[in-house]
Length: 440
Ligand SMILES: [Zn+2]
Figure 1 (cartoon, helix red, strand yellow):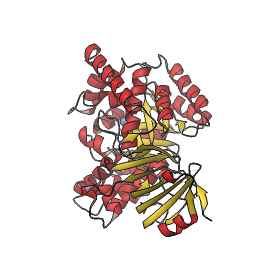
Figure 2 (cartoon, rainbow, N blue to C red; figure 1 turned 30 degrees about the vertical axis):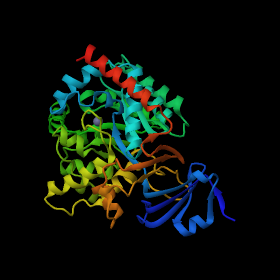
Figure 3 (cartoon, rainbow, N blue to C red; figure 1 turned 180 degrees about the horizontal axis):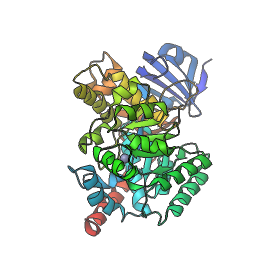
Figure 4 (cartoon, rainbow, N blue to C red; figure 1 turned 90 degrees about the vertical axis):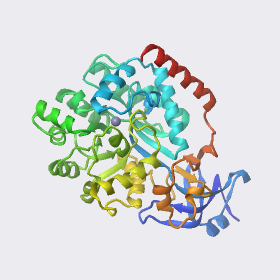
């Protein structure tokens, strides 16, 4: 007599991303109570398990872990395409910060909902976010059933969410306490960057993170001009400067890490600091190409991120995997420096480490059923020799036909099952009109 499960999925191909990177052709997965109950060859699993309802037996193409976006500013979806083709500092200070000063919590929530749906529809199930009025982002994450590590961005100047540093810190503390224990929303301390804070602010952020046992996320060494500024103000390069303040370590996620010298690399690796790599944002802002193959060779823990939708201009992690797997080849003029399996590892297992959520990023019995399926009937995914190659080099993200988090189907064949997308589109249109009329 087969054992009952909530969902029984068959897969033409299954990428488990387990320790051995096991790939199974003709596989099946039994899912119960939000967890993977069992997986293996189709014949074995289908004989052993039966779904509680016939419609919960699903036949799928390529099934793999949901991707993880290790660094984003989700509500910047509202600013997508508003200003492009500019250097980072000019883009940020003249175009992005002025609009962000006018955003309301309601707008941030709508932007976050849009970002969540964009990620769900392109196969991302978890992310790390830093933005303004982050409580509004938390509401959107909760409503869409995604997983995220969230934090109010801390600047050394007033933000639309707080007027003083004390108020900003209290906001993070309150948010951490009110979301503690939530199964899908976690909170972190997020000082924006070296160039928007000072040693006192960073020290206070570190104390807060220790007191509340939270992760820290900060932009680090994004551009050569950040390094020049840091050298002028603090007589040190960004990585040694942060290290001297005690901010580097396994509790910290450093985003970008583009402008690194050999000593910076050693500091980041030796302190076991988590690193988020954003190839598309770095290319678009011409920030440079992070030395990812060298960092990986030294054992660094690295995830992939999309950054905000205003500097990318999308939140599609399939695009990041493809860009990552390509850009390092051309930087090194060597096609062997970054293979497709490494690209996939960064977007799954590396991302799980960057979120401090190691049970994500792989499909293993007992772990959360956070998975996606690609429609292998898509012309660009035929014929099939190597599913890892297809996931990284051939897929665009728009072949995603199913997204499941904690065993719940959130997206199926182009439809969002938990969210009123039509209603959201209307709200987004109204926000665009308001921004055009009152800010631009
Ligand atoms: Zn960023």
